Length: 499
Image (cartoon, rainbow, N blue to C red; front, side, top):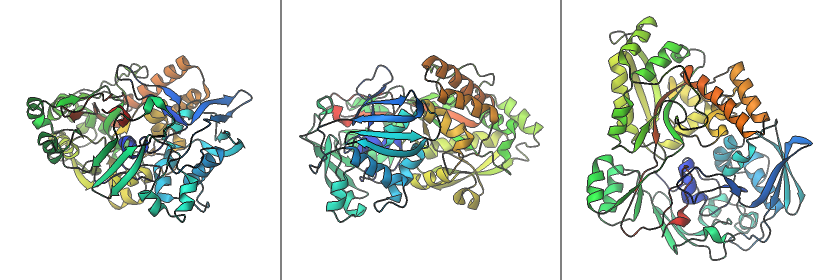
């Protein structure tokens, strides 16, 4: 990452940032199980001990809050604090509204219609429609201290340097674009997540080789995304390469808005068929898996798509020729891609490899390369947003977490999520897809949900709505001194497991 993620309560810089300044300093009402590596985690109680949709009205969710929890500043956690936090990101008229935090979490809470305090330790949230997957949205909603905000003169800038959450660590020092120092919270409420280390220092190191050399020279103990060509040296030096199954896909999200060439199914299929995913995996030193859809074939949501994602350049050329293009008369278009960042793997080498593969079949893509936060802004604005329109952009290259139905399907493929309301960047609108997703959100039966997600996934693959490339394995390299780290099967990771 190019900077320390926001420390005010809602981290920026993507889902990977939650492990650094999210789940260290703060807690959500609904948490994710992060201390298991041999299976996917599940929803577990956080600052809420329980939650349920009322049988009499499934749009009303009741959250019963955990008693006896205090913020780092000593003030009590209660229903008033929860409502205050909803207001800071969802109510632009609230005096403490923070647009920077809202930009990060508002798209992650698309179902929230209203919220109210029932009593000191109970909150009710009303959703726009019946949404059985709503608790997954609450994973992203972290709770910061109203009392600390008041004490610091109602300044989010000051709060960033002296944040107060309920999490297992406290912030001891922040140097923007350089480092953050976290120290153990001795009064943390959850013994199961009590930190094993007294202090963790987060170092900003966006360059892959620089980051890898830092661990080879013992300047740091653990790094994200080591340089693939230095993996043999890392292993020779005694470093441990840590990776795991990760619900994540590196892809291109295509615009289907009026005027985009990608409205033509033949072009979308050709773009998928031109890529040799095994070579992309080799480029990454084996620290990835070819993607043949939004989710891996082992997922209960994969189904049985009839369009098979594979490397078939001859078929790609045939489809392009049918659409009027060839290597001599290529389709010319422009994508927005990141220089690097959380979840983006080896962004530029991967993009440049795929750019070359496309050129060979008759697709000539020019890249607008930006810092990751700029890309996220373009993604949230959508294909008809200011950034994409100004640059004549027809696709983005945000890599996605796909751990639950909301994050894998609903937010991208439901017409109700068309940007800027949600992150349906491409302005995809399909009545059948909406019907499938609506039925899933109205079902509280897991088997029925899985069956409907299979149909949604089959449709997304058969229509080649994205260009699917690889699944990440969230690799890290750890020095000999590191013990006890648990790599969860999620983009959420728990630094309290480090020892």
